[in-house]
Image (cartoon, rainbow, N blue to C red; front, side, top):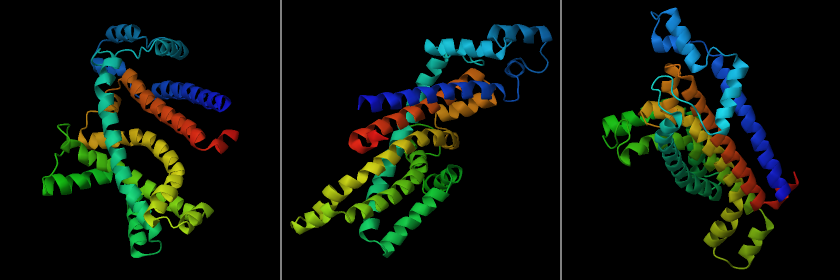
Length: 306
């Protein structure tokens, strides 16, 4: 198990370094000069040169990257070019809102997917199965930038049940969480259906039924319990994807999280903030995938051999 753990952690560190390199160099290739955005087009050339020197943007790119790595080692993400505020302080205000949104979206997805996938498997090739899989197909097909405005139109403008945007109480998180969780619920319901159908054909299920166990006990304890292993894997992988999808959803619902901060920083050419936001999202994705991989190895020892 220790060898398996070291291999997975080593792979995660390698991916992390790759992510850091890509985030830094790609953002510096984006057209636009942050100094010009900060000072305006009418600024004097001497003022631009002085500000560029102050920010370290006049150094060669590799020197800037070396400085960036040194700061990362000391957990220093720098300061915003616009507000001069510490990026760590900015992120400490925004990251909790994004994680709150992701967790609620994940709960909504599980609450929808588990019963839907289980009923679909138990009522295979019936109208229940076709309806559930039809919902799953629709959920996967509808993008967040279309689902969000649709939910606002129905539940905010027409019915008046939830706020249109912002963060003010539990009601304000329902629509953005549903927007994020619907696609995940569709994926999970299909996975639950496939996993349960596969497990129902196993010998231990027939043995449990032959012993006279209650059918629902057979389904919930034996079938569903063994079918959840691939579902847990998909759940962990999709949780990281929720953070990426939050960029669009937070912009639609004006949710004050890291996604909205990323869009604002891109519009202002605030490179350090953009780097920090993309880096946090990417590293969270890598961390969740690594933890999921390790959890899979603990649940199924056979995977440690690969």
